[in-house]
Length: 296
Image 1: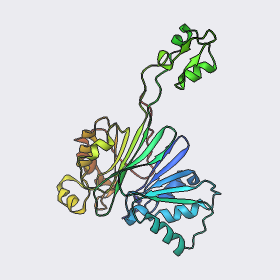
Image 2: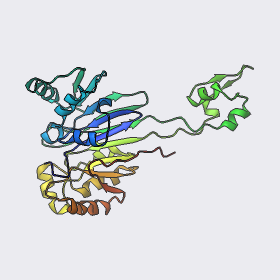
Image 3: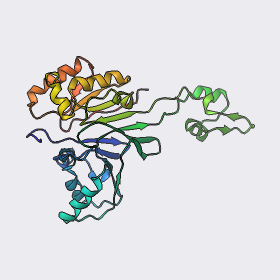
Image 4: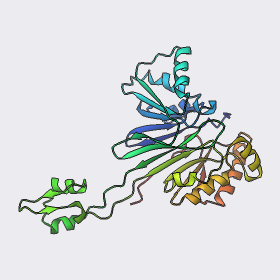
């Protein structure tokens, strides 16, 4: 439930000027406005499951977007019934919508979005309704460019250097062919973001979120309440940390989706239990932001 200083679940990812929203619980638009973000730049919304605390903020976002001269379509992805929810909300509330809304339902692991150099895909979780986690993963980047190698090979400084950096061959005036592998170092990894909420602890989640620069994962209960977590199909903070540890390559774990039984000062219990398993764990709070940098 929303608390005075804790809105419901939502994560906004900004990448190269595009915004991707994961869930839209009550209060989402408040945080977007307080952060002075341009919600018409939200390219797509990815819904984990059809429980009210993850979707009740969407109608307001849809209506607000009509007030900022949005021209691009808004994509909404989610499990079955997300299309019905959006359509019924529009009809019952008599929404004024002056842009295209494209809703796409899915019912399994799937690549939902393909950008020029990244993908967003879903993977199944286990909750009281069909529920999915998401990852945004960038393609590998070309290796570092070594100008001294290009000079030694007789490649003139200028456009040809850019072509090689982009991964294409160049032909020199003397007829020689220079390949990118001759002037570039080993390929460098892209970045990866993962989002997991409302699920029983499942060891198989670890392979889905492996190598995440940032893993946002629910940590609803302390270990003393693990039986409640199992009954309600949620995770403890320590179980979230176990996923991060077992995945391998996870750089930071951000806990989210706390039980309302914990006041803000009591959340340290969850943090301490998670850090005992995975030290680089933080308690996420409303409007907290994390830069996701390239490692090289």
